Length: 163
Image 1 (cartoon, one colour):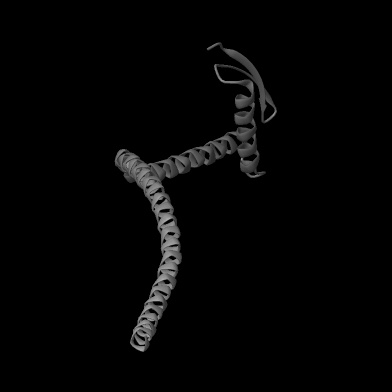
Image 2: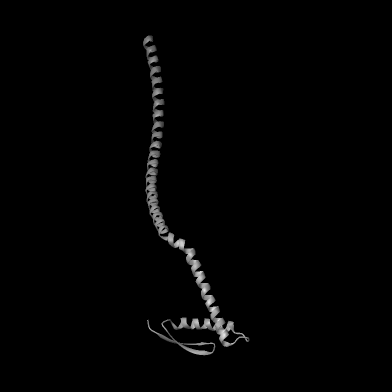
C-alpha cells in the first residue's frame, strides 16, 4: 500500500500526516478529535488541560467501544461455538426436506394413478349396473315367457282333451 500525505487542521493548527489510510478516513478522524477538543474547551482551563481532557474523553470512548466489543464477543461466543453444529443441523434438515419432497412427489404420482383406477372402476360399475338392468329385464322377460309357456301348455292340454 502507498503512503499518503494528508493535511489536517486541529484546533487551528495545521498538521501534515503521512499514512497508508485513505484521506477521507484521516479527515474523519481529525474532525472527531477537533469535536472532542471543542467539547473540552473551557475558559477556566489552559490549552494543555483541555487537550488532556479531550484525550481522556477520546480514551473513554475507546474503552467503551472495547467493552462493548468484548461484551458482544462474549455474547456471540456461544453462537460462534455452536455454528458448526447449527450448519450441520441445517444441512440435515435440507436433506430431510428434499427426501420428504421426493416422497410427496411419489405419493402424488401414486395418488394420481389411484384416481385413474377409481375412475376406470366407476365406469365399469356404471357399465355393470347397466348390464344388471338388462339382465333384470331379461329375467323378467324369461319369467313372462315361462308363464306364457305354462299357459300355452295348459291350453294345449285342454285342446288335446277336447279333441
